[in-house]
Image (tube, rainbow, N blue to C red; front, side, top):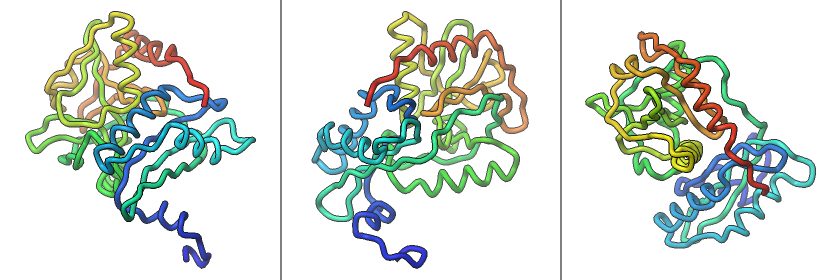
Length: 250
């Protein structure tokens, strides 16, 4: 029973399963960016966690079912969950979200996710940290190691631009779908990119710092109490790269 209402076993499992993983996507006109990467993420994590891989038709069927005939735009999540021996595929659809358009502020916090390469359920620590930094006037938590090495945001990846090079953190992290799409686009177009060990103190030395997730990309204007420069030409290159990524029909 939830809020006084009796719910079925499927709904209860979707809400309370403690073991599993998921992928999150923004759907527009029943299309999504990087569908192949979402399917690959679900396949790889399912193989590692369950040794059983749901077929793409099961995943796509779940998305189609939750969208129904009328929903064209949505924020969709696909979960692979288990409270026993058999994993189950769940999909949820909520309102569509867009990335913020103004430069964001980030607060560095010492925290690293368990099995960071998997987008697993149980995001209480990240949500808690996000709420705490929001209460301090920041938009996102910047997750770092104990010695200050940047890994990722609580729900984002972090990238930097210097000259014509995009720099990603060299640390354990979840390579988000948008990050992978940008990496692939840069490789396809011959753009320069590399991994570096990054700390918060290094960020003012870059032409631009940005956050990326399924909602898009946005500049970072402040880290902790330090203002960052935002070279609009550098950010325009990243935005243009992102905007030219094609959409895949569901």
